[in-house]
Image (cartoon, rainbow, N blue to C red; front, top):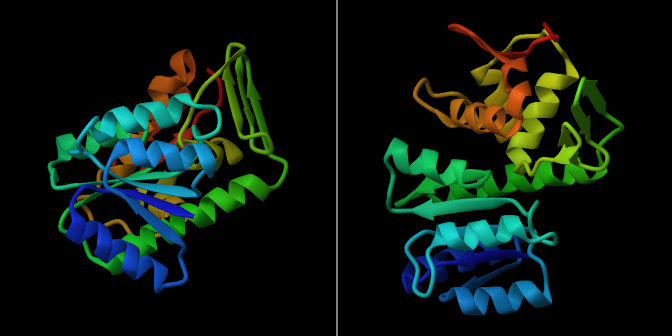
Length: 226
């Protein structure tokens, strides 16, 4: 079930109608209080989250989702009329897995949803992948990353990106390769999604953040310990 928290009736009704008619079960909520009541009864597979809301804004809702054990790994796509690069960076830094500026095309939205759900499913049933370097431990089966013994909360996209790089240490991945594998769409020359996720990933890895190396003009790689 996909939950949409959006106080604009026209947008909410249109998106829910489109999703339900595309074989995606979806429910819409105008207020965070109604949304939380539904979450407490039935955890969603994915959340579409507006930012400007009554009662509490989307950033607060996202923070609560990430702080709860039952929802911290639920994929979240933020929907907002704020479409500047700063706004997108803020949304992704806050823990969102993707960010779509309004107005948006319904086909693009469904494509982003499908990509996130597909990746989430792969994480839930993926193969046995483990990476260890000093105090950095990655376990794809349990979907756990620990830094010096402390579990680090990563979004689905951050975790996928880390596994992609750590799965082939030393290999350089271009931004295009990363976008296609992790997000399911092509690099348009201006998309900053990968760079933003790399930055937040490095921050969450603490002293091991430098292992995620930038290869100037090409992309990124997981460097072997120096």
